[in-house]
Image (cartoon, rainbow, N blue to C red; front, side, top):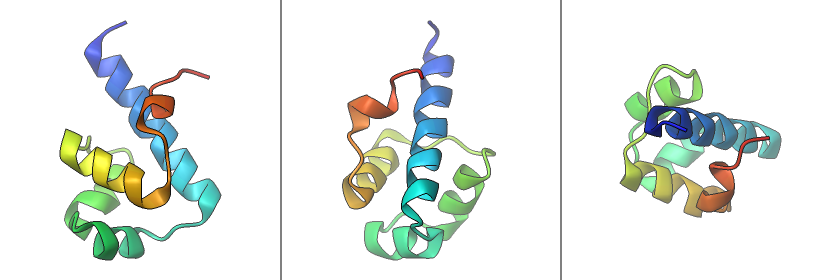
Length: 72
């Protein structure tokens, strides 16, 4: 499995997790310090997160980062 595929899986799973929890992008941005200019494109599938952004968001929303990499 390629690194790009893993990133795509983790991103898709994190977006799904956030949507299932009903957490708003603006709240994530405010609480994590990750700018809205990063969060909104990420939520729309137009941008990947850096590792620090990914970890900050996972921590805030209560997602296990390792679980985000699991394929369904």
